Structure formats: structure tokens, C-alpha cells
Length: 98
Image (cartoon, rainbow, N blue to C red; front, side):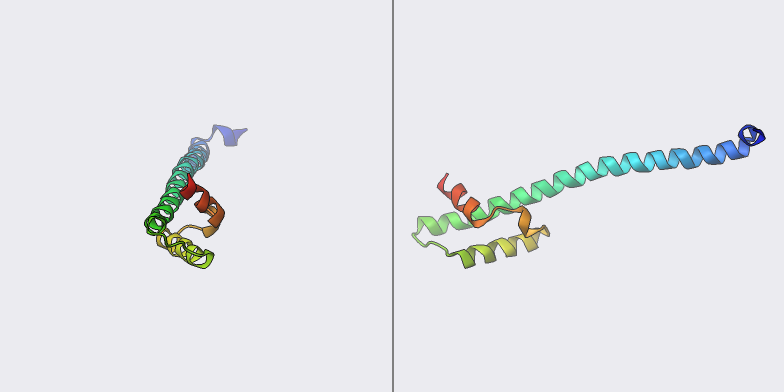
């Protein structure tokens, strides 16, 4: 019980505990911000791919799947995101039809 009454022990333990609490809170808040930024990047990639294909359709040039996948891969590398998170070719066609 004398350990709990020692001000040095209480101060050091309190500092460590408060540091851990602050670390977990800031990690939680920044992870939400990172997720939001990543979602904005994914949306930007999707829009960029769709807008890159629109003029070709107006001109009557339809791209094949290989060109479409290359465009997706290039754009995802530009934004540094995973290509599995963006629209698939079928979803891009649906966006273009819409």
C-alpha cells in the first residue's frame, strides 16, 4: 500500500497511462481521416476513368476491355490506391450508360 502513496510512482504511472490514452484517441481520429481521404481518391479515379472514356464514345470509338483495364491500372498507380477498390469494367459501362 505504500507504493500507492508514493507520489513518484503515482506521477510516472499517471503520465504513462495518460500518454497511452492520448495515443489511442489520436490514432482513432487520424484513421477516420485517412479512410475519408482514401475514399476521395477512389472516387477521383472512378470519375477520371469515366471522363476519359466519354469523348471516345461520342466519337464512336469503343474501347476494348484490355484498353479499359490499362486505363484503370494507370490511374490507380497515379493516385496510389488498390485497383480492386475502383469500378470494374462492367460498372464503368453502367456509369457511361447512365
